[in-house]
Length: 232
Length: 262
Image (tube, rainbow over all chains, first blue to last red; front, side, top):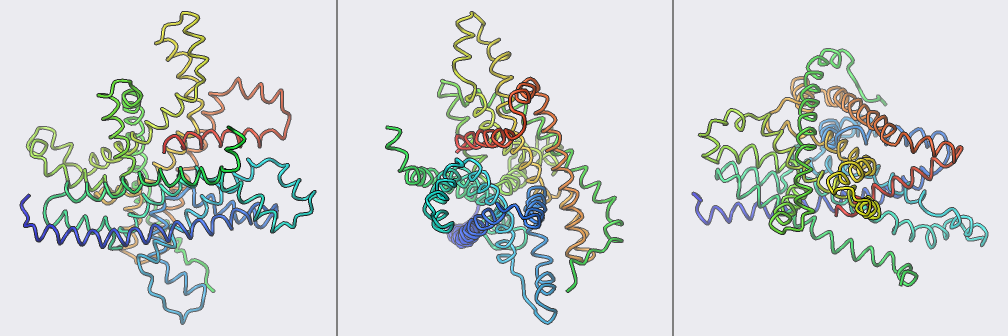
């Protein structure tokens, strides 16, 4: 390597700062997508024509358009959109982080909602009917009967979405966010050592996805704890 | 309140450039899909092989290229190839030096890694009893693979393959970072010229939407073709309401394969 050790560690420190930004964006994006996605998924179970129409259009757009384009759209047009919504005298500076967070939420909430629909479809009809027969109020029925089973059914898909969000997070660097990948690019350009810094950045993501495995296994055991006794 | 201000004149004016960008996106997609189909079978067989010398490198390949984001892979290929002297001074530099080839190579590495799991998942979904039965009937392993396992696996894996193709097609939007002028790059250029935040992105989005839904339509036709005998039986047996259950079952299959992927 033709760079001094001090320089090298400087770049490493910069990349670590970037990694923190990446993790923050990823965690907040995934959490918001999960919360909104579950809410949207439950609301759109309704047979109301208006709700169905809005949901179909939203889902179709999200599933048919690259997330990068939505990040750009929100970053370039975000402040104009907010002004359109809340009045012209409002001026908001849309940061890359804000635009990225909004884009990840909007995109992956649709995928989570779709997942909720699939899980509800896979849940035996009798569960709903039994709740009705026992006169359990809908709110309690959802909280204590339906949701715990949905969590189990939707978990594999949710882990999948988690991994996809993780790999979509670096796209926000193209809107100017100073995250891990942006800093890796700076370091690689300045030192002419692309392999060192880009492989280090990829290993961060590879390790992060690998760490998902034990977490998802633990969750799976936890959500299926009512089933294990039956199986044994 | 003013709805999204879209400038139809600008959209119309930029349409030829957008369509050229879309063409690039389509060409890249088709090349990578073809390369992926060719490369995924040997890598999958290596991954499933009992020989650790084959299985381990294939497993590492899959874990690395599936785990790393496409954006970094493109940077790695684009900026990395120039650092390898054998490549730079070699006779093939006109290939490795071009942004288009770098984009294709980066996308292919990622796509093949995903395809290995799609193919493996669908091959493993074929019931073992069928293989055993054909062995008992004295059918040679090669014919069993070609005539029994492969056609079934194709049908089982179609949904997962469709998901991967759609995901991947949308993923090609990043190739503009290595200076390939694809649809997203054109939209960005138009934005930088006009500072209209909505028109170029929405036009490009509409074109992507058409492309993705065309792919979905193609897969639906292919699926109907591959399971033509099944559909006839199902229609006979279940008049109307069973479509929902069938959908749920297929969705479950796609998921269980994804689960294995992890």
